[in-house]
Length: 162
Image (cartoon, rainbow, N blue to C red; front, side):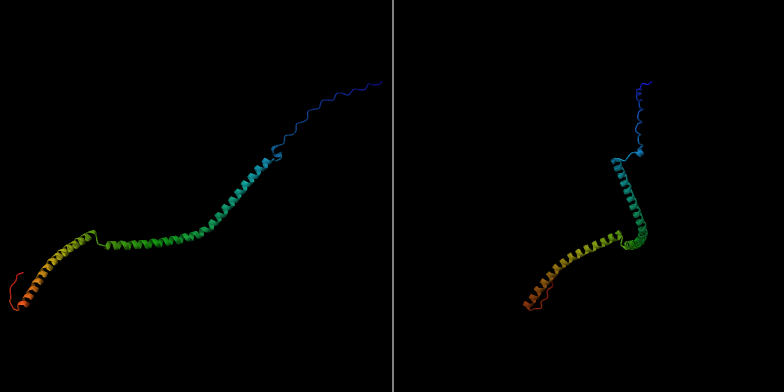
C-alpha cells in the first residue's frame, strides 16, 4: 500500500521581520554638520582659553608694575607736597608785600597833593611868563638909557617909574 505521496503543506506564513533597530542618538554616526558644530565649539573654547591666559599674564605684569608704580607715586606725592609748601610760602610773602602797599586812601591823598603841586607849578609858570615880559621891558628901557647916556655924555639922572 502505498501511500500516496503527500502534497507538501502550504508554507507557513513567515512571521514579519523584526523592524530594524533604531540606533540610539549616541550610537548614530556623526554627520558633516555635526563635525562643523563640534569644530566651532572647539574654536570658541580655544579662543576663551587664549583670552584667559592673556588676562592672567596682564594681571601678573600689572602686579609686578604696582610695586614700581607705588614707588613712583610716593615720589610724586613727595614732590607735590614740596611744591605745595613752596607755593604757600610764596603766597604768604606776596600777602605780606601787599599789606605793606599803600591803601587807596593814601593814594587818593597823594593824588590830591600831586594835583595841588601841578596847579602851583602852572601858576608859577604863568607868573614867570609875566615877569619875563616885565624883565624884557626893563632891559629895553635900560638899553635906551645907556644909549641916551652914551649919546649925551651927561650925567643926567632922571627918575623913571616902572
